[in-house]
Length: 225
Image (tube, rainbow, N blue to C red):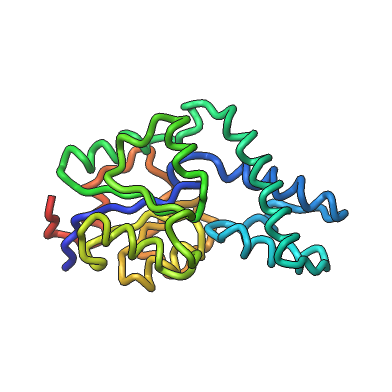
């Protein structure tokens, strides 16, 4: 039996559809090195910090980047990403999310965003989503990226909730691994053909998802809300 007090959400691919903009920006950068960056390649970048992504890109392109060069290239990629998300519309919030998190908050649950992105605040402001989160932890707040559990542990600390009383929503393997390392239950968000090992349950998204039905499926019968 579990006692859930807090609900922690990743950003890209879970709350909003910004993952495609990361993909386009990385693809644009990789093209400068003559590499055709694919959506399959992009799966390795989900939930990972910029510098870690640069290390992966170096392997993909067969290049060696000095630390200063990695920072410059990552900044260039990020500027393109900011350019893309600056044109985002509210309909890019994933279907059902607002209804689901509203249900949580009406029931008295605590909520947090926990993302590797350093632009999380910009996205939340652009789409007017900040009101739905009690705490926001992003790449500016942590030194270690997922699969390290630091971002989730900090979110729990700021919410003043014990780790084992948190339920995480993630769409990337690195995020699933991080949540489990933090001793948290985790809902994997993704299409049925996506393999997210370690998730306690998989859901295609939030559209039509009902909080107490989900908790029953997870065998959570004692919910502190």
